[in-house]
Image (cartoon, rainbow, N blue to C red; front, top):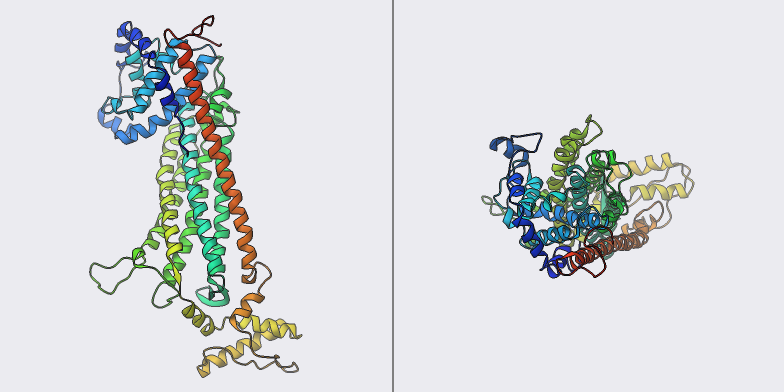
Length: 537
């Protein structure tokens, strides 16, 4: 999310100083509950995983990992507490005490929890800490009407949404850079290759516009995934079949920036197909960038000499003094593999699992998503500086276009325009190319027309003219129109992103306001006269 607004946690801290009195009262009467919260006894189970097994399953999160996970979890908690209070399921003073305690943990980056034992994972350690601090009558009510299953699905959706919005922002910057360079280099003639052989004349700007076109589809795919995420919030689905408690999932959905509550509880906790589609779209973007990187690396070799990079974008060799390696392009190519591999790993983890909440889907399949998205994000950042830093060498590009006989197809088409059958024209021009190579000519200078047909009138077409004449079917003669259409598309993407970010900021403000109102209304000594201190107002 962007923009600086008062966070829900800070709003709670600003208005909840007297709520600590409620927490103190609860602690004075909650010693038994505190002991119970720290006990391995859950009622059904009386033992926990051993230390080594626990490390395998839950890891050993460092302070930053704890902060990152619990920041999202506690945001969900704030919305959930507000909803429970408004629904009459959580007494007002308990809500105020919880909000204040959570605000304190958030403000301190959850450092108070660093090093605490987490025999059943980070969330239950966090909930146990709240119960130990506030007593079972307060902390024990936080999880009313929900499960770790819908909580985890909600946190995943929120994190995925935030990371995709950031990735989209950087992809739009890259698309803008490609389009800018496409306009600048619209007249720099070069050969385009098929099967690594010179094919037809285009321009460097036209090539870059082609990458911007492909990237446009990658952006559209990621936008579709974010729209899916925005549609429904998993919170309220409970463990797997909703709840019979009178909760209001639409309220928490709105406070968290989602369009609505779950449509189907089992689907909400069972499915992570949106994460799979996010990986597919990100992998597609990574593949697109890897193809650009391959071309630029090839073209920057001495053998081609089409593109040069400034010294800030190249590296040397520890052993070979003459080397000038465009090594950043290799990082771009390699990072695409992370997303491709992550999609395969995630899909494999989901395959053939029961359609219900499961570790394979909710934990193992999702674990590979975050490093994959980070890799593609880094690839985009690298590509931005490489695209803006690359400098074409027009003279070398034009030389190779002439030496590659790339006007041959255009010459054949000119014969066609004079009535020569295309296959006959194709044969005649091919023979002319063979003869030119045999005599050491660097380019075509004349064509012997087929028997019965007149010679071509005028000189053979120059490269720039051939490029300009290819103004149908999306050819380089239409480059300006292509760039114009894509610039309009880029504006549409930017407007879409701005709308999403505004909606999330509005939800964040609404949550902060709702938290402050609960604290204002229910903190000891601050209840509005004539109104109860708990339940629906």
